[in-house]
Image (cartoon, rainbow, N blue to C red; front, side):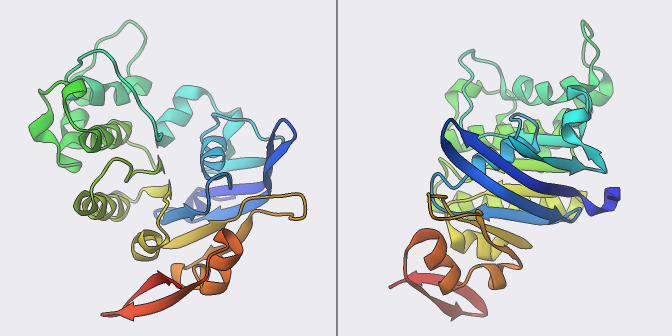
Length: 264
């Protein structure tokens, strides 16, 4: 595997107790692309994201990034490659936003050392990139849930990652800010050549903002394999595939050249 190939997920399976969540998932993800995982609750989206980031060990299978298996890499080395924004993040102390973002520089700061000028500069750049420079001196605990989500994205970008993993990045955001955030994520991928892997609830957002879509279904006793489709959005998100994943009938309408899912 060459570094330019980005990430490879090779036959990954995972169970929690007797409940199998992932079954033989294999993906090849190109560098600098935006990949969106969609599917019903319990289909394994978050679990797969954590396995890619080496936060969970699969029962079977392997994950490679930049040609190396993730579970063979030191944590600080992996943190320089992958930035991760989970669904839930709680900080109870009233740190300033800038202080939260600078913690993304920890993989570059030796133990018992203070941030250097480069760390401060990268922090400011991440604040500008995510459009939250105006919040830099505010308390993290006093800003809105949507603003906190942007702070976590800025924190991840301060790591200078080549891969950005986002678990439901539009959570807590109103409709306008969902769209603005997804546009920002796509622009980050394009301008910084960052590979983005994110989970979303709304297949229409996946249609609009993805280079490729992974459509997953929830396993049950009679099914083997999670991945229903993996490919360009218009090929992966079809009425037949949505029915197989969600059990919902839909039709696809085209509005000003864009395709939208409409439930029947």
